[in-house]
Amino acid sequence: MSQRCGFVAIVGAPNAGKSTLVNAIVGQKVAIVSPKAQTTRTRILGVAIEGEAQVLLLDTPGIFEPRRRLDRAMVAAAWGGAADADLIALVIDSERGFSERLGDMLDRLKERREPKILVLNKVDLIQKDALLLLATQLNERIQFEETYMVSASTGDGVPDLKRALAARVPEGPWHFPEDQVSDATDRMLAAEVTREQLYLQLYRELPYDSAIETEKYEERKDGSVAIHQQILVGRDSQKAIVLGKGGTRIRAIGEAARTELASLLGRKVHLFLHVKVNPKWEEDRGLYREIGLDWVE
Image (cartoon, rainbow, N blue to C red; front, top):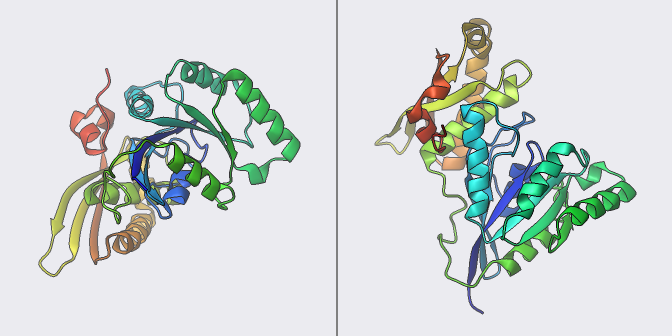
């Protein structure tokens, strides 16, 4: 049997569960997840293997109405990911149902030539009759080639979806070694893991205006790695939130991030965090390159 390999763009609105779905299909964590909307900022590639097929999953930022430069860069990354794909999988939060924003997204997707499938996620949170009605509504707007109903968080329906994606990618040699699950560098992974902890521990307190910049990633002779990172925020009041009383919060963030990074990298990690106030961090072209986004005027 010949090998198959191709790109599948995972697109949808913020908080549709795209990153959770990518992790479930790959079989391990490659994309960070938090309850905060727009957690994913750039295209993240997850590599899944099913039989002789290598499925390259482009986890894209949620598509929403951009209001600032960072928003525009994220939405551009999402549509750019779709442009590179052999197949587009539109992921819908079934519980949230149909909305005007979703209708606008469908209209834009309809114009694209790539084959499209519909993935109704979070089906464990919606009644079956409502789910079938939603599937009918969406297929009336776009002629999806197939519709899948899954729960990325429980794994229900994910194996069937994975097999379907594997069958749809074109014949061709694999792009990555069998043991590689993502194209993210360790440096990028470190920044993402810290940002995830920032959101998980402070998402109700800290606005979306924050970023992680890895200043130094140093391999040590004993096999460990030392990582120095800046947490960028826009105001002094946000810095106080991140630090916490007596520095308790930033230590908790650092400890959780360090523990997960040690597990993901398979080595001892020394993680050093500090907080920097920069009201104009979103205007830093270098930071956009650091986090994998293109500069958008």
